[in-house]
Length: 498
Ligand code: URP
Ligand code: ZN
Ligand code: ZN
Ligand code: ZN
Image (cartoon, rainbow, N blue to C red):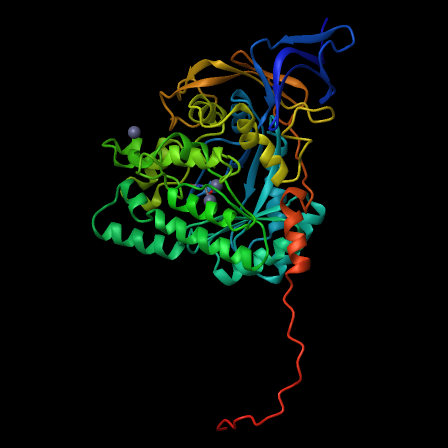
């Protein structure tokens, strides 16, 4: 009898974000207990041969929406199907967004998300919180969420006018609160008023199909908001994390901000790295609608390669998916009006393979950078490193055994998600998850899943991540403006008419 809670992964190449080394990895009771060659392990442990394979930290998907009620409907994937699919693709942790409606309690929304997710998740997960309105009570709830509920990141929307969008002065207040609390401010960067006006214009021109979705919000609408958010973040000395960077123009803004030394991180997503917005012009409405998300994929076909270049060079930092799936019959809510097509695409299952194919197999990044952008950087920014995002003694045993030479063809016919199409349909990817270990248990092996709903755990995160906040704290100390010490003015003051 082999003991399933004790696993020896033998003969693989252990890949972390800073180095690779041929080594065995011994796992016991959910943790990585030892690394090295010729390890002394108890009798009866399960041995997995990883010869010619890579042994990497399981992926962390920084951006998902499971079971989200959005645009009059609910996502096809819930926390069960979504996390099951994640594991099949080598991702062992997701970070989902709690999105309270305007006027609603953040704490209540947090409890709702926890009660939905806890019983269904097959892998570990964490939560970001959206701030969709502003008041003193919101600020107080942010404090409770950071101090008592393990939240250290808050997303603000500059788009979705009248639904989630907040104004610049509210962004200023929210960013200031994030900085005081040691949290990361996340931004959905699109000029919401321009999107709304652009949509009216497209409809008035009789453009009702999915191409109108991109044309009403071209990439300068994303870039302008990215620059505005970065400026407000810099003015408040708050770290900024730009979610779903979808265009060259917005990516350039992030790159420029980082070059100036601003504490800004950019998150491209699998969709933006693996495909483009030319699909919106497809003759088949359902095909075109399947790609609708906000900000949109860009019709410039060189965009994915450009975003990958910036990701490889550390201008962009980390990858998510914005996995927010709606089946075609749900997309069809907008069959006569693109503004009613529920926004969102798949990605949680395929992110690792798509990034390996377009990033590593293409020669743009090495295996270590792959680990950095698929797990370690996320763990560092969101303050769970090295518990997550590293293969090391004492780290959580969230591991993927990866075959860089094997290929697979992505298809909705074989994927594990509940959604009925796949934006990467037919893409052949080098880089395949052979075995996924979550919390020290083999949950996926050679195409078969061994998952249990509720087996994953909520991972609380502490504020003031060193990776993000060391510079912020020092700047707070030395850059606090001071007044000039001078004698008061003693001369004449002009009299104003009363
Ligand atoms: O289209 C998208 N992105 N849907 C999810 C909501 C969001 O803005 O992240
Ligand atoms: Zn968004
Ligand atoms: Zn197409
Ligand atoms: Zn999203």
